[in-house]
Image 1: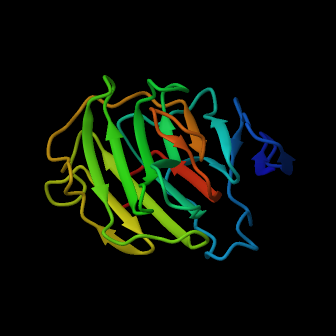
Image 2: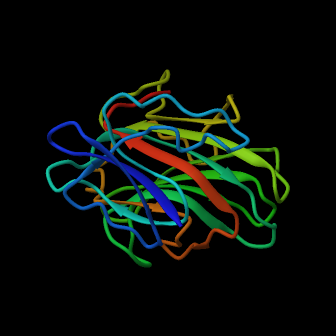
Length: 212
């Protein structure tokens, strides 16, 4: 099951439990107490936040909003067993193997990896933790980027895992790129040739402002 809190035009809040996959097309979900029972502190709203969700599945951006040149993807997840690369969360342009955009993955050893692809699918940034996280451990990950202007020294992207800054040095993003026009958020559902996550996405949200 996945929980969303929908805010209508009148300001009325409606909590909805629904099975995955999920679609919130034309609506703007917002954070309210999704992580009350999770082993990670609830996250404050992101600057420019436009979408939020919990549980494994898809959610689609509101029809009048998207995240293109810059933004932030933040999530909390409980890790599954190691063994193969898996997608924890992503902002993507399409569903399937051809998906482009930004991704947060677990590796075969349960390290955390962040990947950014441009609008052609070319690799623009990769960050990787040296630490690994065993099955059952909770992780909090925040990936911020700006495809036009550096946001940290000469780098166009930053990665934080469990409140620690992780250098994006595997493929450092030191030049601007043409960003993919993302239209959906994946919570644990495989995209771009990366398998489904075998843990649980406790909470995720994304916004239009880089928040290193």
